[in-house]
Image 1: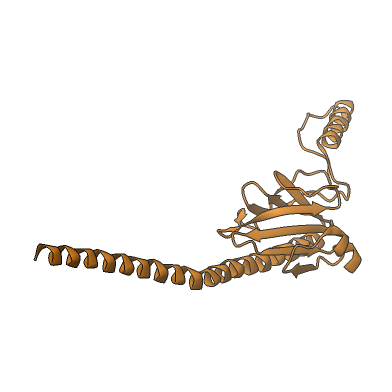
Image 2: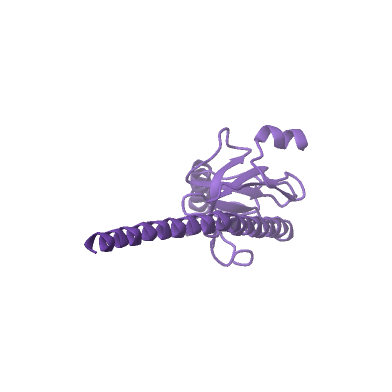
Length: 216
């Protein structure tokens, strides 16, 4: 009697193990079928991000043409954000050195003419500030989407960290830029900003600089 009872308990343990394996199998199947759906969600986020980014780029181009001032899109790779800034009317891009020289010329002129000193820059050399008419605030990339790298006409190598810029000039020219995006599911997209007309083309793959120039 005791032996039969022990065998019954062993059988119960055996069935419990089988049931556990079945549960693990079912959970695995659920994950298997859920993965494509998760990937599709990330793909939708990447697509919507590219469309919104292309719209902002177009608005920056239009703003430069209408106002006659240089505009630029700031790409913050570390913080995963971007926004539009507007500057002066000068077609030459100011550096810290050129701004300092402009300030020195202004101070010499003020001193010579006996006027009160002012810290304002001469026309055309205004510093870049956030353009709230185009982007009211800094735009964050959707969750799971980030910058892979950015290539501009000024950069010899892909920019993978820090800040990059795309400039829009009042006479219609744009700094050609390649923006590479990726998501957590390893989907990739490229936004190619053309140097004229401010057009943006979206490719659902990583487009190299050589490919971009070949298709230009």
